[in-house]
Length: 335
Image 1 (cartoon, rainbow, N blue to C red):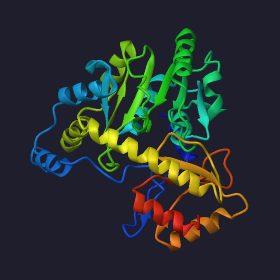
Image 2 (tube, helix red, strand yellow):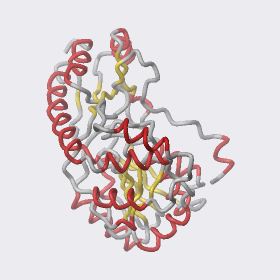
Image 3 (cartoon, rainbow, N blue to C red):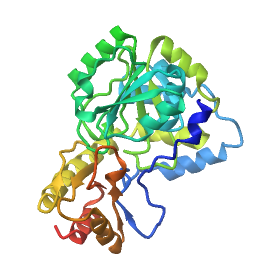
Image 4 (tube, rainbow, N blue to C red):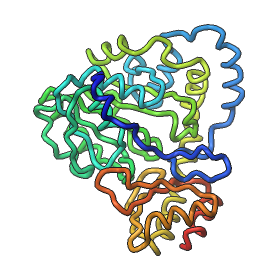
């Protein structure tokens, strides 16, 4: 890590409200969790007087089955962010350039700079067309946050092939891919996939996730990860959740129905972006974004101010929650 970069880099703003008295539409997490999580957590907590097994055999096998890769290709991490930090510290040297999409997750740019690298911003909908030659890493967020669109899988595979030829690593952040039917890129040569258990399983405080990749890079990542990276409760609850494929399918169906319903209602007043994700980005048009935020907050609802993302001005983002909560938001906004 470039210590001098820390003198100039602020923390990245994220969604997520700490006030339990509001309905939080600012964080894109499932408001529901799989059944059985509490009992699994309680049992794991009783076992936390011992160090967790550092091989994480059951977690790797379950995660591998979930994304359809080999268990050895799974690198357990304390959330996708920890995996991204591990990868970037390994493949980005000072002075090297990294292609990052904009607007997208703000931590990409920050993590590149923390390693002394140089982010090269590319419009999020043009990232498949980039020339990876001369870059250490190419970043894709699929579906993209905050715009919500799914990236074409064939286009990703073509980009992966170009990255291999150029000697660049393709990093695909699949934090929201669970909400779509598109298969993971896990197992593709020279591609590193990041997965999070935060979003679809509704457990952002658990801090559990993994990277998936193969070959020499896999070996280096596994050797470079922190020992006991995941706590015993995170391992046990994470393994339990990854086996709940029926829960994922029900969540996917609910989000698809509610997203379309919310999009139709919001379009009556705002310009709403197409989305395959559990959130919608919208432009407030003639309305002042601060007024819209204030109106929602007066009704106990928190939206995400998307003006902190590059290339966005009068934009807000809303998560897709349960039908009754979504109705409350729509009524508050007068749509």
